[in-house]
Structures are given as structure tokens and as C-alpha cells.
Image 1 (cartoon, rainbow, N blue to C red):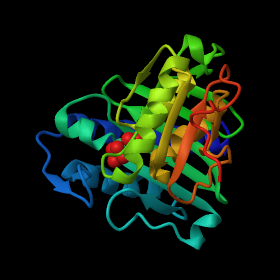
Image 2: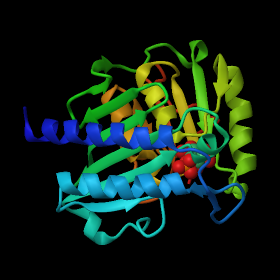
Image 3: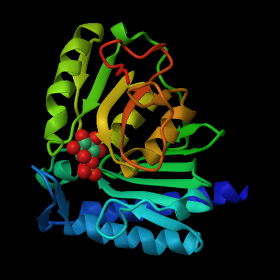
Length: 263
Ligand code: LIP
């Protein structure tokens, strides 16, 4: 087994244990962050601490970037070597209200590029994973995005309630997209949405602003499943901060005009 495959196996084991913490949490204390409906729970913080401790034992030299307090600043040091980019619970509001899914997202950059991606949905025991250049897998089975046209597919989108300045544009885009696809869905977790595009359940995901910990793992998994993942201007993702994201399956050959932003 290659060194990177061994690292991947160990990361998946950590993700599974973190998923058990999520499943066993009862009535977590909720903290408000800045803006409308921007939450963090004690379980988010507990899982983030667990991930830092366990992943740090796999790669002691790695830096960490995570959603919760104290780990959320990207620094120049993170442009070289290993960096874990973690979201302890992607879909925090879903978790608080018991609306599924919520997932654990663990990305590993090497010299600023996505190297390994793991997204774990503990509610359905779904382990999505990828190594750059070596394909994407769901519970050990190779996955590939859909080759159906958008007109024969579901599309998904996200919007954080605390980015109030993006609401009008987001829902205007969604309204214009609806006639071009079978129907729209909205899950509340960007990482899981992109994994759904990777598995062929839907063929497009878009969101006007998500954080690097929301996309670092899932964008690699989607890319390795044959998706095209860009920002809303059609440019590659930077993996160093928040960005818009459009994730297209193989069958969606171009960015729909209603989603394409022009500088
Ligand atoms: C979530 C994102 C999702 C967005 C939600 C929220 P969190 O991340 O993954 O795409 O629409 O509002 O920001 O905060 O649950 O980790």
C-alpha cells in the first residue's frame, strides 16, 4: 500500500470515529456566531478538537485550518507542506434541528493543492474519499458523475442565511435555473451536495460563497469523479479562502448562462 493510501485509510478511520461523536451527541449547547442563523455547537468544537488531535498524530508536521474558533485563518505558511482543512460538522443547522444530513469534512492539501479528500455522512455510513489523480470512491466503490444533460437531472444549491447580501442574486439564479433542470434541491451542506454530484444523484451544485473547509475535501472528490469544479466566473478554486463554487457533472458541458458571473 502506498504511503498516501495508508494516510487515507487512517484519515477515514478518524472520520468514522468523529462521526460516532456526532451520532452520540445529545442536545448540544448551541452558540451564535456573527450574522443571522450562524451557529456552532459544543459538538462542532468537540469534533474539531478530536480531529486536530487524531489527524495530528497521522501527520505531526501538518498545519490545520478549521471552521471553529482559533483555527480559521489561512496563513502563507499553509502554501507549502501538508495542511488539513477540516469542517467538524458541515450542515450545523441540520444537526441542531435533526434535519439530515450533516457530514464530517477532512481535506488535505500538499503544497497548496488538494491531495486527499474525505467526507463522511455518519447517518447513512457513507464514506466518500479521493486521492488526487486516483479516482473517487463511496464505501470502497468507484464513483463517477452523471453523463445525463441538466434537462434530465436534479440540481442543488446552497446559500448561508448570514450572507444576506447574496440572497437576492442566489434565488434569482435558482429561479432561472429551475426550467433548465428537472427540479432543485437544497440540503444545507455544501460538502454533501458536491458528493451527491460526484455520485450521479444530481448534476450541478452552486453556491455564491462558501468557506474553504466547506469545499476542500468535496471539490477533490467531485473532480476525481469527473466533475468540473470552478468558481462562478469559471476559474479554478484557490483553496485559500471563501469563494463561489459551481460543480458540474460530466453531462453538464458548460456553466448555465444564468449562473455565470462576469467580472
Ligand atoms: C454550511 C454550508 C452550506 C451553506 C450553509 C452552511 P456549515 O456550512 O456547507 O453550503 O449553505 O448555510 O454555511 O456552517 O454548516 O459548516
